[in-house]
Image (cartoon, rainbow, N blue to C red; front, side, top):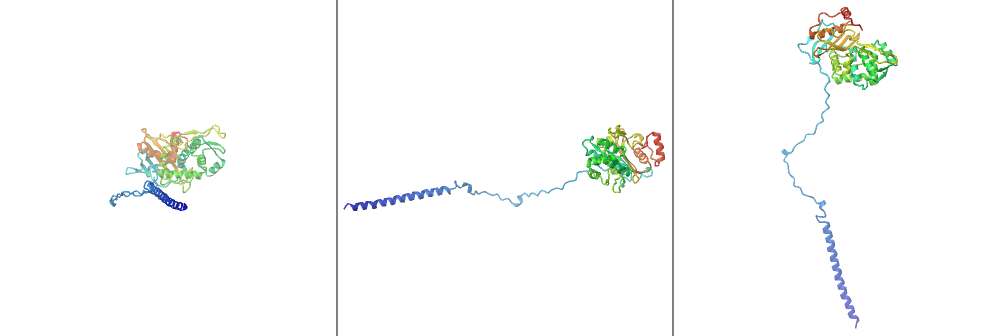
Length: 373
């Protein structure tokens, strides 16, 4: 009788338990929903949110077009020299100048005052050494550096009958001594020594010379050696030689060297008293022969093919500079006396007259008491 109520009580507890379990399930679902809602809400996913941007539409006519930058080809540097010009006032020389080629330039105004075949091809002979000097000077940092002269160099140049400064085999020659040796007595031993010192070989040095030709803007010059020994492909023009000399005058070291009468080299074992060098141009003149203008320096030259040559510069008392070039002259003095005539056209103080002969030149040289080289 007492067991029945107990069974009924168990069934009631089971209903309550089911209800409780339902409530727990409902709460769990609400919790899961809340978590999912938080995860997918805009705040939680603001980094993934796509923002809308108002785009302004530009009409085609308003669009600025930018051209692609074009690469300009490298420009060549301007030439370092200015070719002189001639006009109707330029004197055209003929029989009154004995040299086959002649030129007189007003350096300050870049004008040709007188000319005879100024643009013709010539063999420059030792006027070449003007370029040798400037290239050697521009590639030397210490003029007290030395080069050991070799007997091989000397023997080879003697075989070619080149003019020599007088350095000896195994002599330690300073760069400055070789510069003067190249300029004053026109020594090929000095020019070869300079070439070996600067570039290691004459061929490499000649390459530097021709590079300088291009840099200067010279149009009709090409070198094959550093001394001026004859070669068919070693040539220039009177105008180009004048421009080389004009460029040399812009370098104070070079200007001083080509304007020197005499120079004594350093004492060495082979030459304890040094070598006394005399300028080949000033051995034929004093520089004051033409009244009103003074010839201050220059460079002579001679080969059978080139004839007697001279490139010189002169100044008037007011400092106005002129350059004269003569080439293919006959006899020892032709180029010198033709230079006098050229400078005489400026001051009107030296006769143009007939071409000076070697005999009359020697007579005049004796009167001037100038030593003959």
